[in-house]
Image (tube, rainbow, N blue to C red; front, side, top):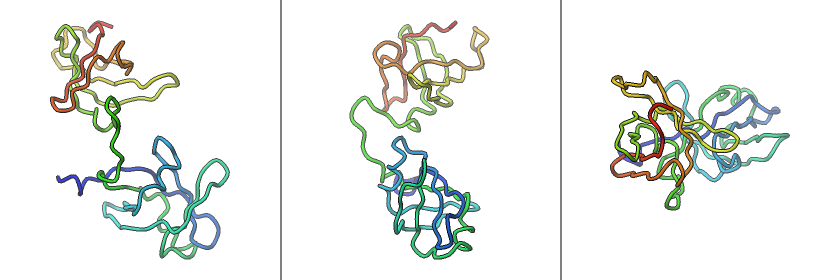
Length: 176
């Protein structure tokens, strides 16, 4: 699949707000307000994509509401409730060296600095202090671990991330 056809889910539309077509917006971006930096949005409903522009948006309580172009009443907004908000991958900003999108780390192999293959990154978790790699162990893992949780601490635990080879090198004991 080419990069311009790859979409990333960046949020979700919530319930209608008011009678003029506004909708609540649930942002999945690191900076929640950053979802409005993307234009246009691709609305994902029942497996199909629809391109739509954000006409206006504002903060509301602890979240956001948005007015979408062509959505002018509560009934039209109601149809979009729970639709996912996607953006084209090429709309994402380039990150500085040493920073990664989580999606780039999923599926990478994790090896120790001593050469032990710990498995592949299956997911990531955000904790209060740092992100954590969820590594699904290989089937022949001699330590009986189904998955490992490895803190994503650069320099002390994560020694190197090779995006080209798709390998993360860690200083971590296999039996931990």
